[in-house]
Every structure is written in C-alpha cells, then in structure tokens.
Length: 88
Image 1: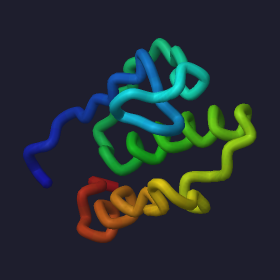
Image 2: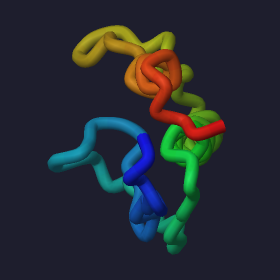
Image 3: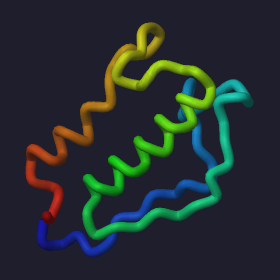
C-alpha cells in the first residue's frame, strides 16, 4: 500500500469486446489517452467506464451482463477495493 506512487493505464487503443488478443475491427477503438492516478481502483473504474461507453455505442450489453463466450463480470475492481488497494 505505501509503495504505490502512480498507476498508469495505456488508453491509446481500446478493445470493448473480444480482447485482449485478436478482436473484430469494429470492437477496437482509438481512445488516444494515457490515464494516471494515485488510486489504482479509481483508475480501473475509469477505464471500465470508457469501455462500457464504447460498448453502449455498439449496442453491446454491459460487461456484467455478458453471456458466452466470456460470461465473467469484471469483479477484479471491487476485489481490489475490498482488499484496501485504494489509498482513499
């Protein structure tokens, strides 16, 4: 906890479905951003919001409502918050 200074998220290119490997071109988007925060949980939440916004534009369901082939919701963010990763 005390050793984290700055968390960074490379948001130059995003994938909102089928990633991180080969994805359909329609699901790959240029965000052109580098996000930084002292709070890694807040940073992950912001990254998720960006992906969810793109999914909404493409009329894809929210990640938490996905079905096959990858039905798992993005629980890692809440898990990190519960473990006290967030400094705030």
